[in-house]
Length: 390
Picture 1: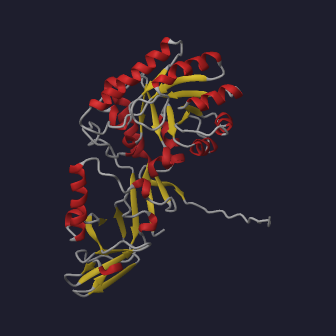
Picture 2: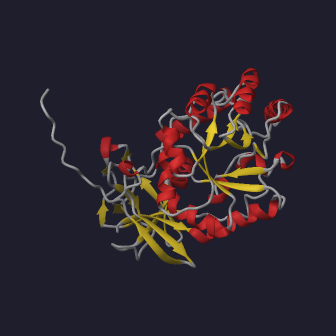
């Protein structure tokens, strides 16, 4: 295949079980499988989590939930949204649980009397979506007059749980409890209350409530701050490619586009068919969160300019690190393999990558028991469209 992503379903199952043992038995677990399960394959991951007995699954978009239902997933699916009015009918058709995060949508549901399972999304300081505190009285009135909505619970989202400083987390948690208490005093039953994400559930067990939402931890990813799981979690994702070309170049030879690297010695290079079109070496442009962070970003860019080893991108061939030379091309990358005497065409290279940045066009190989269980490739379909002149 030349290039592919391997997904270890056993690692995901093991990570889930570690979370399951950590939370109370009565606390439900929602597995977040949005964005194709963070690049791991939503259908396959959801199927594995369902076999493990997970209580809920969570996605952001309606289409993600429909895809899981069409694949035969039976577990309750909470769709975070937000939504357009016409989405309501699809939510009902595919038995998806809606997040009610604004009054306008709630009023539409009431007007049309569309029976749905729902969780109330409460705004507690994230600043994205959710019902505000001053909207809760009207929300409660609408819900009491319209019993077609099955309100399963309420939730909110923490914005700084990955920080060591927990003051804002505690502020959001207090605001959430205040909103929940108000709704319950108004006669709105909220059986499932949840606010903890991956970054929060290991640090704030007192905030587990009725359910926790787990994303990054399932996939063995860093979540920031002090995390009691980090050394125990298993990596479930591997980006791999094969060497397709080997060449010997002399000292002083320029490498790649714009000649950003000049060889300092005679070098054996290897070519792999992976580049930035596949998401390799592509990083999101993030706004620094403060002056110190800004200087760190600037420092890294300066080190990159001088090709410093600390910021060098490395692949791995049979346990040996191999540096990427020059700029990563659209579909090809150059590696320095001078220090691997027996390297040959066809050898496998393990590569780093930001999982949600890696192109879905790369085949995914799903492993169970260390052996391939399934290969998923994206098959493009084209339909002929006739445009009539107006």
